[in-house]
Length: 468
Image (cartoon, rainbow, N blue to C red; front, top):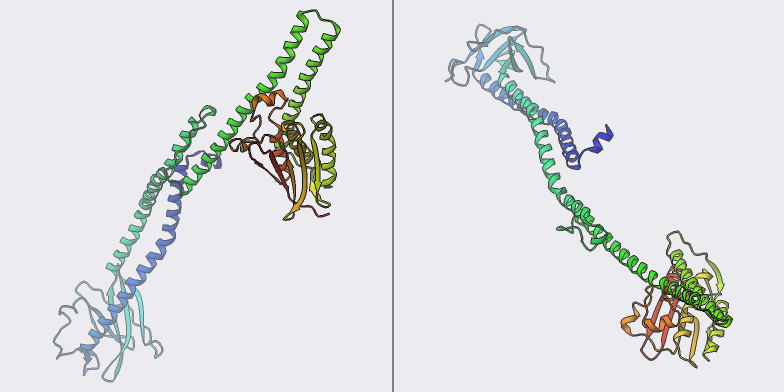
């Protein structure tokens, strides 16, 4: 049953649920409404009985023979309009003294019960033949004799009214449920129409048409918010696909370059006889291309590992000065070839909670880039200090600088400001991307300040600053 219910359309389920709820409300309210109507009709009937009792009592008097009779001086008679349909009886000591019936009336077959001072009147219902009567019994004193004046009112009309109301509820409830189901279905169709349009549009969106978006005519309601979330997801998908395509194309291009060089050098060496020195040079060139290919592959694998959702940095508390001095020693050998000076300035002891492998890779890439793109005889400064309870690392060079139009893109993978120079120097455009991802994985951020012709300054800001 549950599977069958879930297999129905949402419009159908909403319509049935709406009808079920309306039916339950009607079934709960119908008895209450019927009871209130019935009580009101009986209350009005009792009030009319009270009026009839007062009218009849005003026109009765004691009879010298010991009974009760219609007042002789009364301007009205029992047959007068307003009295002919009034049923009344006068009882004393369970003896019927006077009664007046319409011509179709039935004689009384029961005497009234004894009334008391606490309950001087009584309302009740009795049946005579096939007819139901509402009865008011109240003590009435005529002269010196105490009697009970009984007024009867036919309830046939009231019963017919209640029966009509009950039939109305009985036939109206199914009709109301049907109308509720129809209205619920139409309302559901109308409300779900935008979702149907969204689903149809989503079916047409493929990897080749990720620039398309779902229709969203009402962005402020719940359906519009859903469409907005899905469109935002498509934005991210389009960005991811674009990045993936660019990454694939760039990676293919970068991998093809050393592979092509390897193939070319190998083919030339095989076609032409060479002496041992030439063969050594050829093998050396092939090894250089192999090393370039290995470095590129390692950087791609590192990026993939850092970007992985399951990657978790291995944090430990380290001294920042020791890490920077190790990087300085490693780059100093390369800087000496270009007669560059690499200075290290650390203000006080600084300790940070970080992953030393990721942080070392990020700083190394920045310092190595400063070495590659700075001219011979220039100065590179590696500075560390604390600010606002954060550890700050600055790498400053005296290179050509980076134009503003390139500064927002240099952290993208395979992006080069100068394609020719980067390839000549062996760069693949991945170093800054690796630094950015590494720093962000550590909860920090990296910034670039540069003016063309005045060098660059890369700033790394890490949390958990540097108190010893």
